[in-house]
Length: 519
Image (cartoon, rainbow, N blue to C red):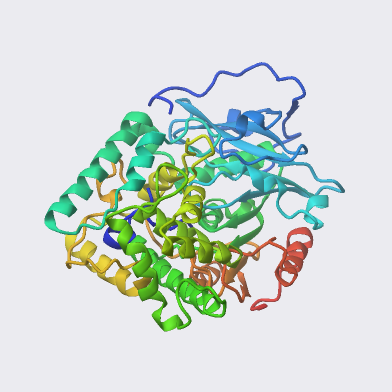
């Protein structure tokens, strides 16, 4: 789950096109070196009116035109577009395209594994190469996908131009005076209006998890799988959970890693996430204190104060960088957040904070660019715009000012390293309070009958999806829980054998890990 890093403390909001009403692309001729494929027979019931979508033929081709995030897919990966209705209540209306990727099984094939990396807003095409080196690659076609509105899927959610994103990142939203709150909320209104103008209300109404799970069932069918085998990370656990609720009889196996609690409100989720990032920061500070050149000093108890002394001056004056943009306050916070996702990035955070002590911001700017989806040519993926569009329809907005004020105070207390010390007791309403379409999902307790045994993986010091959320999800789904003791965001198929080996057995042979497995 991506963090709400931009204006997180003051508003619990995010870090930072095809015209509305247009139809999906007309069918095109089969490209050279492409392969047409369709299921030999469609297993399971087909919802009324959706026959043409469930029985469509895919045109597999090179992934060159699908690359929206600068990542290079291996030569064995191929891509295709799946046509789905924009609005499942109107299947004869506008259609859209969902991009998928595939690496074929190298041995005796069981079926396909559909995978999603989370976000929401992240492209998932690269996951067609996930689980390399395991028997998963022998027995399954590995399938990645870009959920509707995201990455190579068409139309895309787009709200800001690249120049506008650069400008937004330069502006620190720390003023919580009445004038500052009014200015921040005016920015939220402008952003929402841009989303309507550049994406369209009809698309924004239909980019939530409610629709994504319907798309996943179409994908399952056109791949020829009677039941879905799925791996979801972070926000991907939310769409996996929602699929299990909507299509319980269509589930073969699911691994849900880095879980979100379906019954948690957006505010409670943000506060819990803030506390988890504080834990990760504390772990980083303790590790840093053991090095000779720790920018936070040798006493972890003073680390928050030292960190604030480095980043607070950026509110008034960005640090110099080789890039002419400089390092803004928001980018310094975003860069630090990015590095706290994994211990493998801690060395970059140490280096970046040491640079900042010398008045330079190059390393933290590069980290912030990675998080924000800025490419080498200065353009941006639509990860932040899609994140905002999905989260604002996936949960109820906070429109009560007293609740917003209380949420701000709770967040500052939960994550003091993110507290700029400028609290006034008041806070602006979050972006979602100004969103142009209503939410289509709400927090609720999941209670599904007829599911096979699912597996939830939760990491003890996961900064983005706190451990307890995994405990709660496993209980609601009556799933087996695997606990990994570490400080990172998600773990499945990252090379940790004590986690990966039981998951491979589960996916291949449907033998769940021992419930309560901990390593």
